[in-house]
Amino acid sequence: MKNRSLGQWIKKQLADRPLRANSLIITIYGDMIAPHGGTAWLGGLIRLVAPLGLNPRTVRTSVFRLSMEKWLVSEQIGRRSYYSLTAMGRRRFEHASHRIYDDAPVAWEGDWQMVLMPGDSLTPALRDALRKELLWAGYGAIAPGVLVHPLGQTEELLDILQIAGARDKVVVLQAQTLGVLSSRPLKELVDQCWNLDKVAAEYQSFIDRFRSVARTLRHASTLDPEQCFIIRTLLMHEFRRIQLRDPSLPRQLLPDDWPGDTARALCRDIYQLCWGKTEVHLMQMLETADGPLPRAAKSFHARFGGIIPDDSKQGGS
Image 1 (cartoon, helix red, strand yellow):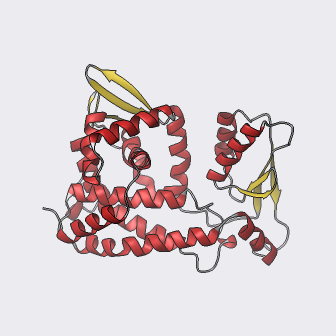
Image 2 (tube, rainbow, N blue to C red; image 1 turned 180 degrees about the vertical axis):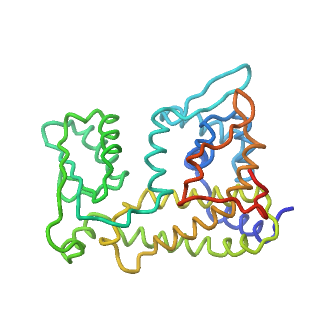
Image 3 (cartoon, helix red, strand yellow; image 1 turned 180 degrees about the horizontal axis):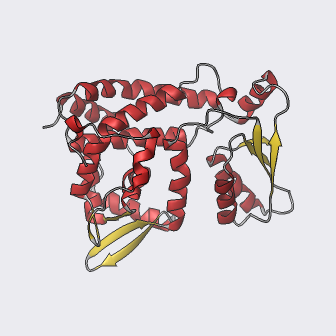
């Protein structure tokens, strides 16, 4: 039985914030389909997203475009089309998942990862493409051709350079902050490199938007699988968007009133309340060429520090 209050909240969200199909399908693949093997029959996907306001033609067009962009690859078996994540798509989801689902490291010792792009080693097109990828990964430009991150992941950086074809065309250095880690000049540099005010405003908007649905979920006696799927989709679609704009800086470099921690805690709570019923819904709606959707990989349960089913509401998965 559907919850009336949740139904009204969902209706308002879908009316107030029209969803871009391509981006929404990426969210669903990354958050829901990837842990189940990364493949789904197109017909099941069309049924799954229909309550979000996407019609079959829109879904077909979107998965075709995502295939052209190398996110998805299709396989035709009989009259059915199955769409799977490409190797590139999987790598991007894996890199993004750490920023989305993992808590930020508590300690920072002042280390920086620096990428230097010499002027003669890169074509203008390659320079722009690499810069875009590094900014997407949270790096900040402190000078022309110099990008840095205080918590840069070496494996992710090397993957970005490899995909871009720039691994032997840039210089990667490790640097160390000398002196006080939270000094005023350092924070001024952070303000210049990363637009934290905009990210903070987006976090606050996220909190204002989802706080009420969290209260309703906590007090509901039962939860409907389809409603849980829609809420989890809207939740992760918005949280993913903000996370991929958040450079994930160490606590020492953030403002004292940073709202990202509150937003993450709220997201974790709603995810905890919705994930079990959503998994039930996915198993009912989606299938692969081999039959039913396989259960989620064990790594799925480590999200947000560990998600545990609430049997009284989730009904198991």
